[in-house]
Amino acid sequence: MKYILDTNVLVVSISKKSPHYWIWEYLQKGKYQIAVTTDILTEYEEVLNYFYGQEVSKNVLTTLEHLPNVQYITKFYRWELIKIDVDDNKFVDASVAFQSEGIVTEDKHFNILKNIDFPPVQVLSIDEFQKILHS
Image (tube, rainbow, N blue to C red):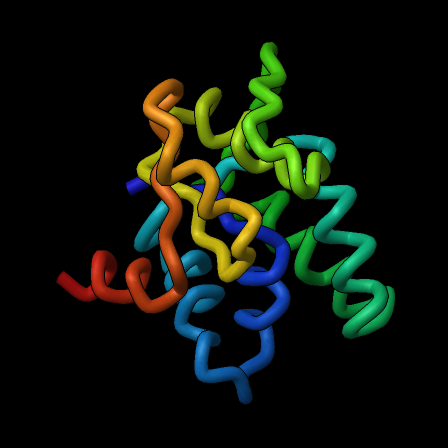
């Protein structure tokens, strides 16, 4: 199972005190795969630094770098499907390049993808993602 994790999902999943810690834990246990790009890693780092500080950010990024189920990909095309927050397009482009089963996000800007037939990009909430992984 291949997915893209939006930054907001990664951020809420890394604390053991979070009700969404299972996302981070399952990733570390290899229960699903994710893909990252340079742009995605840069955003992860910036947001993790802001919320948790440099040490936690470095530890998370180092973990991602060493997990065998985290694939670094290069995207070759920019689809520019999200107009409201164009910065979110990096996740869409990665999803298409990785041929993922979806982007896991709580960001409403991604809802526009539900109305776009091509390329097909599924958007999953944390709850929907949890149901898939537990089925």
